Structures are given as structure tokens and as C-alpha cells.
Image (cartoon, rainbow, N blue to C red; front, side, top):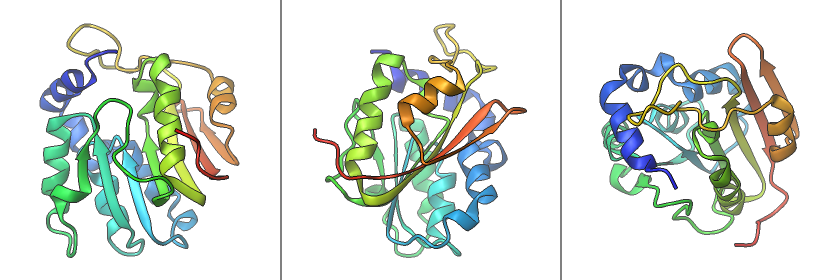
Length: 204
């Protein structure tokens, strides 16, 4: 398995765009599709939360979810904890957690909403299915998975010289893997946005 933590600690330290909301795919996607989220309530988890822009957005009005975030990078988690510390009722240290391997540290069927924006393509193909199953596991029946994947190479390489988008696949490949209820493809940004209702927990 690649040293994802080492890679993304380095990325967050040297790439300023990862610390700007306007360059956050999740932040901009949630704003663009906010009407499809406003009717939901309950617990929400952002997987690969980065600097915490989605967690902060969904915790505040008009959404007001009980929000958690998870990331592999110490640098990202520290930034996200700082960001959400000002939100009333949120204990940043409890709500922004480190990812250890592919396992999410949450109970089955815990969240009404799980989001994951432009994260899966950053993983080796061998790791994608495990992360996807974990997100399905923590999503309650009838809950919503809302996320995106980029289907182009990244303009950035990691500290080892590899492209940050480790799995660049076609739209059809991602649709077959994710089997969404609804999907939209932005040809300009080469980004696929996906909505999927949970049918129930996936066995561990």
C-alpha cells in the first residue's frame, strides 16, 4: 500500500490550493447542489475531508448536520480541527478523525449522509473497493452517498514523482463500480458527480 499519509502531509504542506475553499471540489459541489441536500438531517461524514471545508459548510445553516470528517493526513486533520473549532456544539478533536488504513472508526449504519469528493481516484485501484465498502457500511439504510471522482490525470505529482490521481478510469468504469441512482458528468472539468441511496449495510 502506498504511503498515503506521507504523500498527503507533503501535499498539504506545499500545495496552497488544498487550503483554499474555492479550490475544494467538495465545497463547490455542495454549494452547486445544495437543494438536493437541504431536506436531509442527521449525522454526516466527509471522507477525505482535507482542510474541513465540507464539514464546516454542512454543519452550518441551512444544512445543520451533525458533522464528522476523516482524513489520512495529519496536516489536513490539524487544519480541519482548527476550522471547525469555532462551530457551536462541535468538539473538533472528536469530530475530525484520522484514517488508519481503510477502516472507518464508526459503527455500522451511523450516518444519514456520507460525502467523498475527488478522493477515490487518489487511491490505488486495489484500495478503492475497500474504502467504498467501508463508506457503505457506515451509511444507514436509505441514507445518501454523495460524492465525485475526477476522470483525468492530476496536474500535480507527489513527492515520489507519481501522479496524484493514481486511478484514472473512464466514466463508464466508475459508473459500473459505484452503481449510482443519479450521476452527472462535467466534461469541462472531467468530473463525475454521483448520488446513491443505501440499500443497507455491507457485511464486514
